[in-house]
Image (cartoon, rainbow, N blue to C red; front, side, top):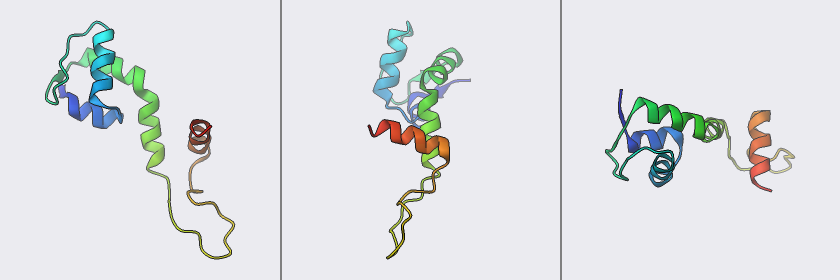
Length: 93
């Protein structure tokens, strides 16, 4: 099964340039073209390397950004699951 570079980039939540650089540094030969094909071996290596980006993308789906109502003590975006909240707070340091 082969997928295009741009589809994999969207799935992994990583730029195509980042993917191409990583694969080239890992010994694969791939051009930075949106329709370049990613092999199963390349895909497995990418999943291993960018799993955290996938997790962050999934966690962001659960973020509820809204406006605080008057007198409310709840933080904006307070609807994050615990593990996602910890990851996001570490990134903001």
